[in-house]
Structure formats: C-alpha cells, structure tokens
Length: 228
Ligand code: ADP
Ligand code: ADP
Image 1 (cartoon, rainbow, N blue to C red):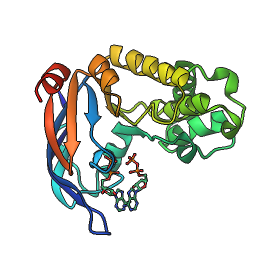
Image 2 (cartoon, rainbow, N blue to C red):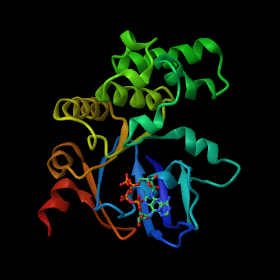
Image 3 (spheres, helix red, strand yellow):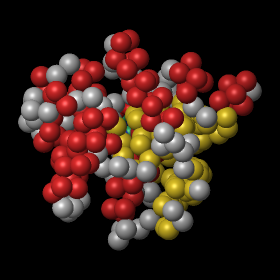
C-alpha cells in the first residue's frame, strides 16, 4: 500500500534557490529505494519535506491517503525518520541511553513502553555495552550506529538515510550495508541517498535519479542503470 504520496512538490529556500521543482512520487510499504544525484540536486531538501521538517511552497504530501497540513504534520514527523549524514550533528545527549531515549520520551508514552522501544533499538544496533557511555567519545562507526538507533527507537514506517556511508571508513561502510540489508530483508520501507552506484544496484529495488530539483528517472535498478 502507498505510505507517502508527493504531488507536484516545489520548494524554494529563502536565498531564492529553487531546490525542488514539481516532484511526484509514491512510496509503498516495503520498498527499498536509492536516490542518486549530484551534490545540490535536491535530495536532502526532498527528504526534509518528506518528514515535515520543511513544508512545501507548492504541492501536497499525503500520508496514508491523508493530506498533510499544519494540524497533522506531527504524524508525518513521527512516521518518517531521517538518519543524517553527520552523526555528530544529530547526537546531543550525554549518554547513549539518554540519546536513544530522547525521541521516545517525547511521545508521551508510559515509561515501560519507552524503555521497551529504547532497549529494542539498542539491541538492534548492538549498542548495549555502550549504554552509559558518552556518545561523543565513541568511534565514528559506533556514533553512526547510535544515530541509527535514535531513529529506529521511534519505530518510524519509513527510514531515510542521507548518504549513509559517506563519512565512514570501508569497515564501517560494510557494517552500514549490513544494517541496510537487514532492514530491507525485514520488509521495512527504506530510502537512501548515495553516490555508490554499485551498492544502489545491489541493494535497491527502485532507483530515483534527481537532478535540478526534478526526478529524472524512476524505475527498477535494472531499468535505470541499463537505459542511458
Ligand atoms: P543534495 O542533497 O542533493 O546535495 P540539497 O537538497 O542539499 O541537495 O540542495 C539543493 C539546492 O538547495 C542546492 O542548490 C543547495 O545549495 C540549496 N540549499 C540546500 N540547503 C539550503 C539552505 N539551507 N539554504 C539555502 N539553500 C540551500
Ligand atoms: P547534502 O549533500 O547532504 O545535502 P550539503 O553539504 O549540501 O549536504 O548541505 C549541508 C548543510 O548545509 C545542510 O543543512 C544544507 O541545508 C545546508 N546548505 C546546503 N547548501 C546551502 C546553501 N546554498 N546555503 C545555505 N545552506 C546550505
């Protein structure tokens, strides 16, 4: 079923840069999507509109068929999580436990439920031994895992990874690919942006090519990479 539908999305920054120009997309449950495009193509702006951090100038976003507006935008923020490229900018708390608890605590749920969500995310990312450690002293790969646990703990329906392997060494990039494989095999809906065409080909069912704020190509990896 369709989780997100984007219709004619246009976004312009205050500086006047038109970052998105008439984007149409449907995101369905369980899709593994790779978004390719040069720096400045509009990938991050698209993601920020998809999770309600930015609001479109023109066009609409529908979540499960319901049009997103000022009143219900929090549902979009909850259902679509973004793992940002730079874990250091995402991590704010003084321990790993506090960091991963931050999102769930803001959901106004009962404490045992919050604890369950946090434990599950720490288990999933194999971070239990780091619970009481300050995240800023962890290695780059460990910090990346914390930033992913942050998002997983919220149990979003769609997880977006903005250039997940960009600032990682090859070992950690491999770890990240395993995480993406695991999430993908569990029928989670995952969107990544990447410059790694080989990985996109191996991992993605669907590939989008973004250029100048438009979606130029949208098809299976085979369709997009064989047709030039
Ligand atoms: P990508 O993620 O594909 O690199 P972005 O969405 O970050 O592309 O950027 C799209 C365009 O919008 C670029 O021209 C970029 O310089 C511009 N842009 C991005 N963020 C901002 C911002 N905060 N203020 C002004 N312009 C921005
Ligand atoms: P990415 O390729 O992941 O979009 P960028 O290097 O384009 O990363 O952007 C990093 C940060 O700088 C983002 O928060 C983006 O919004 C901001 N940014 C990008 N381009 C501009 C710009 N022209 N003016 C102001 N901020 C920008």
